[in-house]
Length: 390
Length: 215
Image (tube, rainbow over all chains, first blue to last red; front, top):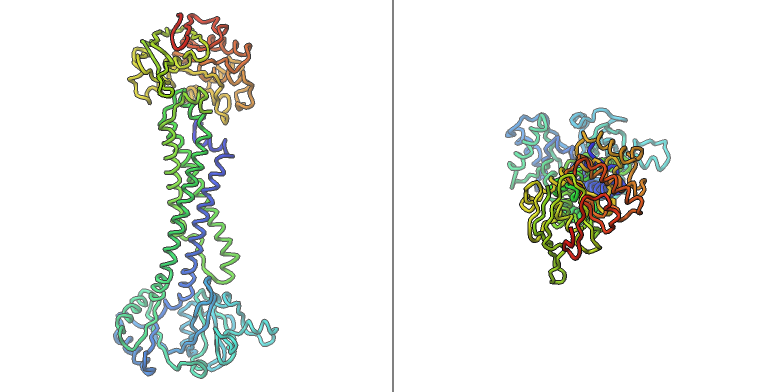
């Protein structure tokens, strides 16, 4: 290997190069982690409401008797084949999200509809059983149980354990019901679900409005149906509940946050780049004797510049790769310790988060090289060998 | 091989023109040991930098093998220095992270020179120190490594700028002897303020205040 190979310098001067790599690594780690964690908020919200991707909800406005007619109209005029329709009731509860309590719907369904609904949500495998019609009983899915720290109701357990088996209760203002609604089943699916029986809801919940759920054959058709229904019923006495609206609302909700995030990340990249530029300047200043000697004995300015470019490229890329690895490790740790136990979502390989880090090495490289080029332009090797600059 | 024709090097000091070298004409012949002698500030180092193309003259021309150094682009002049010239400076400038052998190889960046570099180390009594880093060598040993670096590739001219300045007399003499013995047919141009270091010189040029006072 040539003595002037960039790797020779980098490896033999680890005391100088490792801290620089470390700074780049920390910068990448910081940016990727911030963006991933911010992205986990809308990601969690989308996941919470993902069940609505499987159906189109329709409700009446101003006239509670309209629901069957609306369902009939959809069945008749739908642009895609309809697999099943059902009538349901809905009451409200809350789940915990990264940004606090988030509203969630408890659907009241008949036993038959509940079986179909669960199979559609890949939740046919149940620990426990389905709620008995009319009883104050509910079935929830595994993520909801994890999120709310709920278990199957056990009448023989301690008071604290029994309380963990209650989904809705008169004393719970966020997830209220006139009776204590016990959890009798936990569906093993990754979809977020809370179901009780339509009979119980009709008896105990207000307002007395039936809603319709319409299921297409697959997700593609469902999406078409959602969009069609939204346009079809616009301006009429009907309200459409569709997943694409959740998506749209989430995007709108986080638009400002992302604008702030972009400013913060942009500033961070700028600060880090400027700091790295200054560090590189100091780093290269420490090597003036080396550059002076090499230029004096006959190495050209371009040869030296090429060498500096390769060296900078190597440690900037090394810093970036190590930073990406460290971010991945840290995010996995955060996911395991903070997110998963609460059923929050975090994508440790979020491409958007890592793409935010891409400008970093380029910006650092450009600033670093600019400082070196400026230095080389006015550099006189004689000043070194005459010891005027050392 | 090298000829300087009415060469001057002028620099400005607080708006005043100062002659580091004034209308110097001389010739460096093949295979000769040319000594340039003068007190401190006489312009001898400036003359060496001019002859080697490290600096360009303010006036006059310097020719190497018939080519005017001022007319050669900077990059080509650098390449010429690397290929045809060897340098030993006052201080034993070595790269601290390279071994003695690797420092010598900087003289000619060619992997096939490895054997020649080892042989040079042997001839200069440093074979055992080939893998040592500069801070593990004494001052005399470091300067001998610089001599080996300058001699690698059998340059046409070796320029030595006060190579003994940082050494004691005994080590200084040894370095000059080594330079003279191992220059392998190339010329040696050595600048010094110590006449005793030029005992083996073929010719001596004396400088004072930037001018040649005797040749």
